[in-house]
Image 1: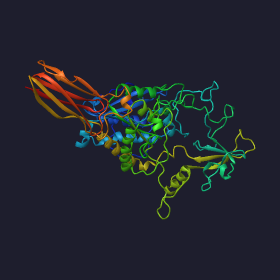
Image 2: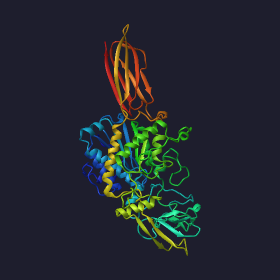
Image 3: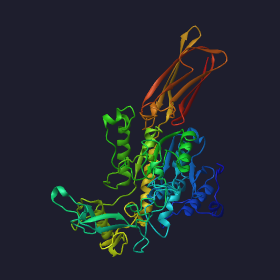
Image 4: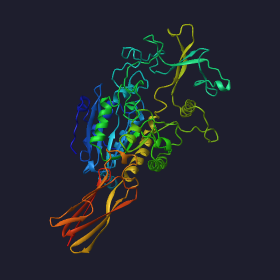
Length: 548
């Protein structure tokens, strides 16, 4: 394929050096410039099966990169969109998406992968909020999800005027605990480093108030509520948009990043049958449950029953491939990518954090039980020798005169970001999973073709349109969506032929996995008959027959 870069950055121009397209061992997480160089190198080394494009330019001047991978008529092969970085602070998602592309292309010369790429298209978006993701690589580290759009989060008429302050000078933004009898927070009974809400029903009393690290710079009684970083892309999608909430903007799809991704998927990637995203939402290690009430609403807010069955099948495969164990709750968020892909795009949508705190074993090798995720993470980190905690340290705070104020807590990013030395194995298991999903794609094939004389120069033609995939040709919800193409079956006749009965063009909303529909026509005359069936999401099958 020819490279088609809609917006070419200076970083890309200076970064066109060769990097082997192999899934080589890597030392850590990729910055924006490293990501750009790696994507460019992958495209340069595989131009016959890749196309690198920029679907948007951010306010900070960065490209939202897309690498399309496939051979042949890529827009008419079943597609999978693999998306990372919608929640920018989840940098693991970007790395797993990038490494998926690297590992897939490293095997592009094998017969198995050649066959897969000849019938499947991959749309790889490794980082759709690059402006916010840079905070992980900055000197001052905090979990930032807002892009470079200036916002007035506290609606006081001023922009970005009350951000974080590094009070202890360690270059991490953590938490502040302020000793106060009226506070509702207390120390965890098993690990005093961890702060938890006091359980008043069981006689517990709070003795601290908790804030993010910083000062009340605009003196409005709130801390760090209007700092640098504007719109959270993972709150900017159109389904269940969170109006009037910080980080969501005034209107859905207001940002270049969101608009660029959605425009491409709606207009260019109609062949996509599944969206696999990396983020905090999770329906892979633990599939969604059917909620009849939510699924029956006028505005559907729960997965439909048949789609839940598919989710369970895919979840079983995910757990088999990754073996990550039980994950913490990963509930969908308002305005997120995961829900949009199912409810508005009409595709199967699968999301996973890609990693979470592993089980912690006791001396007998048994899994310890924890009632708090932070306590579990600290126990795991201690066992693994990982430095993830800033010890509580007293500081002088001008907003709390005559009160004890301490700064500390779990370091930013560490709850969602595994050590770099396990990235290769995580990428390998997730790549295997995605490639297995690709092999299960819906595939239409014309089978059991029959032609029989009906007398008086008439011929009856019958054929089965068979879906040989493990996915239906469309989700049940997608069958209600005008953006999801139905399976079209059409017949073309020679000049000396006419159609007596049957449809020249017929549409089926969906064909189940390993299912079929039968088509029949009655034709007068002789000549060549051509039958074609399929959709961009299933590929197309053609059968030709000469009727004498």
